[in-house]
Length: 86
Image: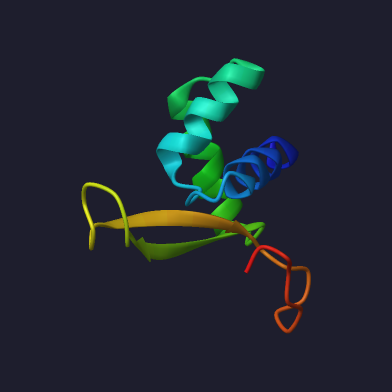
């Protein structure tokens, strides 16, 4: 499931969007037919296990500038390592 989450996060971020829960759920439902509650549970486990990190994103464009949302990133193997996603 962690690999599926990573794939979903990579896909959403490749679209230049914040990988929030809603977008990750939609991707996993479409590609793997995973239920929403299962995705949310697995996201919580992945954050707890430090496979994925969570951050607060603030919208700059669109209908709700300044709106905050929780986004997910793939945790680098080393804290000092810089990934292509940042």
